[in-house]
Image 1 (tube, rainbow, N blue to C red):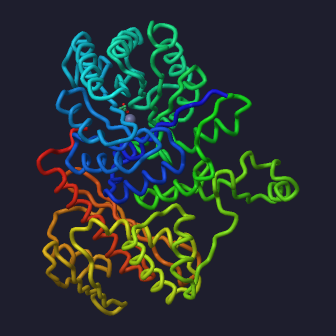
Image 2 (tube, rainbow, N blue to C red):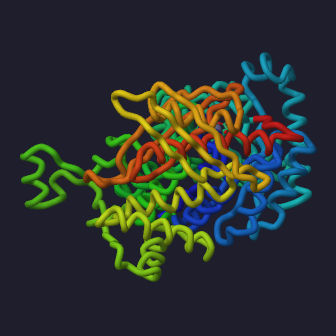
Image 3 (cartoon, rainbow, N blue to C red):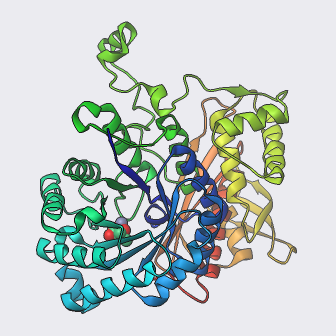
Length: 512
Ligand code: KIV
Ligand code: ZN
C-alpha cells in the first residue's frame, strides 16, 4: 500500500488557537510524544514570530531525531534566514514558506500583483534551498484562488527547488468535491508536479476539514497536515486521529497507509488536551469519552455477543486502556515512574521528584490515585516549570454569613515572598482580587470551569480559566483536591502565560 505522509502542526497551527499557548517544556513534551506516535514531520513553530517561538523551534529541532522538523516562515528574506537559524541543528530539517495567493488576499492584504507574488515565491524558495534540501511552499488561501494561478505558482516554486507543495484551505471554505477537483487539477496541469509531494492543509470552519483532506488524498495528495484533537486557528485544523483512523479502518476503500502507531493516539490526545487546556468533547470521533460507549440496550447486547456489531474500531487499537491502573500511598517511586512512562511522560529527575512528592501528598488525601490524577499532576508540573510568579500559599475564609476573604502569598521573580489580601463576591473572586493586587496585570476573566478529574467525593478538582488581555486569550489550569486552591493555581497559570508572552514578544511581536 502507498503511504500518506503525516505532517503534524499541533505545535504551530494548533498552538495558534486562541488561548492555546504552550510553554517550551510543554512543547518539548508534546514533540517527544509526537515522535512516539510516529508522525513523519513535526512543524515546530514560526521562529520569526517571537524570540520565544524561535527558542522553542530550536530546542525541538535539537531534541527530535526520527521525524523531520519543520519551521514555518513567511516569504521575507530575514524570516527565511531566521527559520534556518532555528532549525539548522535538526537531524532532518525543513523550511515551510507560505505566501498569500488569492485575489482577496492580494487586493486587501498584500497589495501586490500576481507577478510580484510569483517572483517573491521563487526567490524565497531559492533562498531556503541555499540552506537545505527540504523546502515546502504553501500558496495561502489556495481554495479561493483561481486554479490557473495556483498551477503557475506551483510550477515556479518546484522549478526553484520546492520538494513539497502544500495546498491550504486556509479559511475552511472548500467542499470535498471542489477541493478534490483542485488537487486533481494540480496533478494534471502542473508540468513538473512529479518532482514534488502534493500536501493538503484544511481548516474546519464548516466542519469539513477531515472530509476535504480525505477527498484530496483520494485524488492523489500524499501528505496531510493535521493537528492532534483538531486544535488550531478558529474552528481548528483537520484532526490527525480522525484522518489516520479513517485511512486504517477503511483501508479497503482508500488502499493507503500511514506510519502512525495508532496505539499511541489516545495518550497523545490526552497529553495535548491536558497541556493546551482544550477539553475534548465527549462525542468527539476516536478520542471522545463516549466514542466507544454504548448506551442502548440493543447495542450493549450486540457488543456482548460480538463487538463488530456496533464497533468499527477496536478501542485498544487507538490505545484506550481496558481499565485504569490505580496507585495508592504505598506505591513507590519506581511504580510511579513506570506508570508515567506508560502514560507517555518523560520527566527529568528533578521534575520526577517534584511530581512524586505531589503524588504522595495526593495519595495521603485520596485512597486511589488513577491515571487521570497522574496526568493532571504531571501537567501541573510542566505548567509550572517556566512560571514567573509562583503561588506559595492561599487561605480563604467564607461561608453563608461572612464576606469571602482571601490571603495570598506569591514568590516574585526576584525570589521575594509577597503577600496581600482581598474581599470578593465569592471565594474565587477574593483569591483573584488578592492575586491582582500583587501581580497587577490588567485582564478580563472570560471563562471559569471546574470539573472533577475522576469520580468520587475525594476527587481532585480541575479548574480551567481563560483571561483576555490586549485582544489575546490565555488559558490556565490548576488541579487540587481543594477547588479554591485549584482556582488560584489556574489563575496564576493563566497570568504567567500572559506575562511570558509579553516577555517573549519584547523585541519582536508575533507577525502571523
Ligand atoms: O492555513 C494556512 O494557510 C496556514 C499556512 C501557513 C499553511 O496555516
Ligand atoms: Zn493553517
